[in-house]
Image (tube, rainbow, N blue to C red; front, side, top):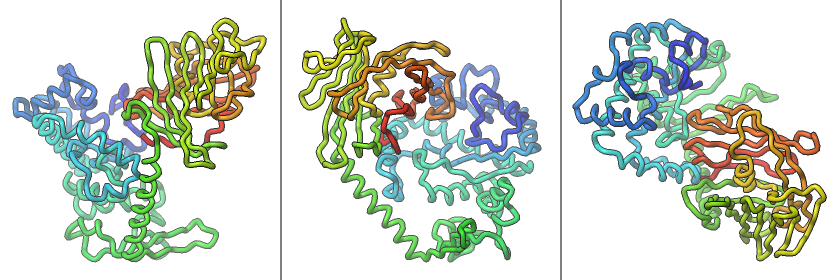
Length: 481
C-alpha cells in the first residue's frame, strides 16, 4: 500500500509492510528538516511548490533540499528488509502529461475526459516548475538505482489509469524506466515477470519459462535484451487459464490482438454517442454517475448550493425509453422538495405533511417538520449530506424522510424516521489522497438499514461517494465524471 502521510518510511518498514507504492515516504525521509515544506506532497503545499520552481530555475540544487548523508543508511535499511518497492514511475512523471498520447483513444470515455480536464493544469505550470519536477523525477530514478544496487526488491507497477498512464501500454514504459533507473535489461524484465511471482510465492509455476510452468507468454520479433522496446510489439500472446475445469491456453496472434483493440475502439465510440445524449446539468466540473437500477438505466446529477438550500439537479433515463426525465431534489431549513414534470412535492414546515402543488398529499402522526423527500437514488446523497452535516464521530441524529416508492413519483410516499449515527471516518473506501470518507450508519425502527459514505477528496471533487441502504434500488453505480 501507500506509506501513510503520518507514518515515517522507517516506521512503515519496521511495521512489515509488504509493498510500498509510488516511493511514498522517501522524499519526506530525505528532505532537510529545516525546510518548512512538504516536498513529497508539494502539489498541496505552496511553499514546497515554490522550492520546486527555484530548483527548476537553478537557484537551488538538490543538495539544498535533501540530506545526502542519510541517503545511504535509508537505502540500506529498506533494501535489507523484505519490503518490495513498486516505484510506478509512470505516475511519478505526470509533469510530462501535456497532451493525450496516441493510445489514448483506447481509454474509456470517462477516463479520457478526466485526463483532458487535467492537461491544462499540468501544461499551464511555469517552465521553472516543470523543470524542477523533471529534476525531482531524475532524483527518484536515482533512488531506485541505489536500491537495486543495494539488493532491494523491486516490482513493475503502473497504477493505471492515472493521467498519462495507459493500462497495458504503460507496462512496457515502466520496464524501460526501470532500465533508466539503473537496472540491467534482464532485471528490468524480471521486475515484471519473475520477481512478482516470487513476491506472490508462485515462483515455482510463474514468472519463468520452463516445463510445467503456467503458459503466460509473449512472443517477440526482436530480442528485448538488446532493446527493451521490443516488448511494445508482441507478435503472439499465450494466455493460460490453469484454474478452469479443464485447463487450457489460448493463443492470440497479432491479428487477434489488433481485433481486440479495434473492438474496444468500437465500444467506446458507441458509448460516446450514448453519453452525448445526457443533459447538461449545472457545473460541468461536477462528477456524474451512472447506475443500473430497477427502473432506470442511467442517472446524471449535479449539485447546487445556495445561501439556505441545497439542490440536486438530476435527470433519469428510464429503461424503457430514450427520453430523459428531469427532476430537482432539494433540502433547506424549510423542508424537502421534489420537482418533476410540473409536479411540486414539498414538506409543510408546520406539520411535516407531504404536499403536492401546495395541497396535502399525505400526513403522518409522527412526521417532523423540515423532513427530507428522498427518491431512493444516488441523487439523495447530497440531500442526506445536507441533513447530516456537522455531526461529529459518535453523534446521533433523527431525520424525518418521505420515501418515494417510485423513483420519480411520491404519490404513495411513506414517512420514515431515520436514525443516523456518525461512524469513524474511513481512509480506504472511496477517498483519494487520504482525505477520508465520512461514514454514517442508518437505521429505522431499531432495524439497521445500511451505511452512507460521503467522500471529500480532490479526486471526487468533494462529491458523494456511495450509498448502501436497504430500499435504495441501486446497483453497479459507476462514476462517469
